[in-house]
Length: 271
Image (cartoon, rainbow, N blue to C red):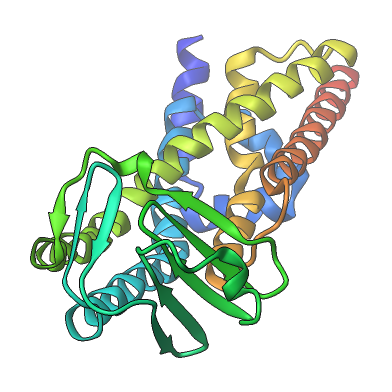
């Protein structure tokens, strides 16, 4: 067993990261070699690719978050009247309703109870801010409702809210740092799900591959899914049940890997 481990470490040193990345997506037969590499090397590969793709993929969402917070900060400072939020109730000073137009959005503010959600239906994109809840209309999609009761523990006025915006904007940099690490943890779990599906194939085909090796192969098998996830975030595309698609893609690679390992072992026995 010790000789096999040493051989695996030696093989890993002769396979570059770029080769692993490329072969894991383009060559199911190369998984025969992945099967001989140590689990530690596979985890290091996953961590490295998760950081790289995670950083690239989360740049756009992070920038969007920062711009959104910056816009809110600007609007509250220059356009919003004085207000106070306490026990889940918003109180706004001055004559209401207040109608603001920012870019292609209409923002309607009324904490007096005179304005109804039906008043924003004539706008394509709009936000209605009431004393205890807010409504967001985005095109033909259903109007979303958010009740302030979920944050009733917060207490602030306009000055305090503006000050907190600096903290929220600074949080965008924390997101950019934390997101790749969370992406790595998510990929560990995805590889686990794929490996569990692989145990069914392993048992059905009587391949006799140990679970630790199935998990190791699963790490490489989800490379394509990670790349697709990165591209999806860059383009800002939302797809229903996309995580299931990632698992299916990883499973297909793992199935081909198990099949090629069986074929390789059969040929070795014949020789």
